[in-house]
Image 1 (cartoon, helix red, strand yellow):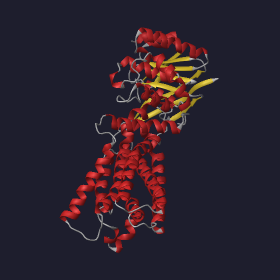
Image 2 (cartoon, rainbow over the protein chains, first blue to last red; image 1 turned 135 degrees about the vertical axis):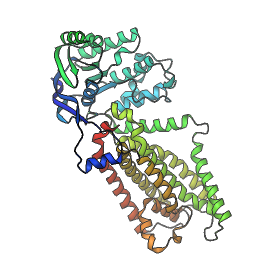
Image 3 (tube, chains in turn purple, yellow; image 1 turned 90 degrees about the vertical axis):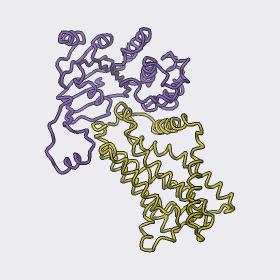
Image 4 (cartoon, rainbow over the protein chains, first blue to last red; image 1 turned 180 degrees about the horizontal axis):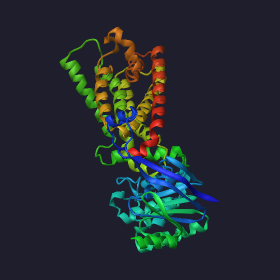
Length: 240
Length: 256
């Protein structure tokens, strides 16, 4: 079954959108010619089967984050179609949605609820998530006292336990110590064996190589190469 | 955009709890601020309007003022926090597929706890000063419920606009200041010239104050026409807010 499908997807940001001034909005409404368009993604197509690990590599600004935004449904495409089959959980950026003044437990519940886990399941899983993250001793401390690695461990632990069909990861695996990385990779492998799909984005090919079977390489919003992870990553490395 | 399968109630609850905990965790006096704030304002206004401008027409001025202050304070606070809620939660909007409506609504709901505490204070003082309970108190939940509906509409509309035009926050603040004078907080409705009275009743905040006073101080049911205007304008504002929000939410990602 196809888990993720992008069909000729483009996402356009007009230069100058994002100005938050009344005058620029008035200009838009009065039909001032739009400024030059900038394609964050241009005509991107690929599909990922269930149970596959799929990687996306590219330099900063290649359109990786936009691609993830489209995949998670945070923003919509301007052209083309994005089809996602199944429940999605995303770890986009370290601890987004965590509040520094709340304790680990409070953030765990907050994050789980926003990722779409039910209250009942969250209560059942809470202890297990804390154990997975290895944070038993700190879970009642405010998050601002956590190290980057600890924050990331909690974020990762919550996301993988929301029972997603599709797990979306943005650069996160690289953080955390060796022990935790091994634990993460083991867990990701077992998710894949259970038929879950993993979409992983990174600028470092090494992370992707560890559990992705196929990959695409993005540059300036367009697909440079698509295929087996090894081939794509070798080509990407050669270009560095 | 509908790739979120979570529980609305759980997400709402978490966001409300977050707002509430964050607000009070760093305050030595905690929830007492909800009580102290209206009491101080009550004292100041009572001093000005009985000590400096003496008036004979309003009896029991402190309670009279409090009936106006509490609905107004809730309105002003919830409106302004709802307006800035989307900007403050940029991280959530840009990273998670949570339904966006939840954010301004949760922000208004988290202010309801203050409202609850302040209403308890008001009811306590009303009873303590010998007004007594009457069967028209049953109108109060409806009246205050409509206020919450009204503020949610305002918060959705202004919150969404604030993403595109960042000055919105200041517009809201200025409007609140103006409303403090234009809502009958420290003067009674009877002082308002008849030609403005109809317009006053259309303003849900003014209507709320009037209805609360009818019930608590005059021990009578609020006039039917007032309740109708209050209900219709609250529901209309909510629907309008919802509509504006739906129209604007599609491009939040680009502007945040």
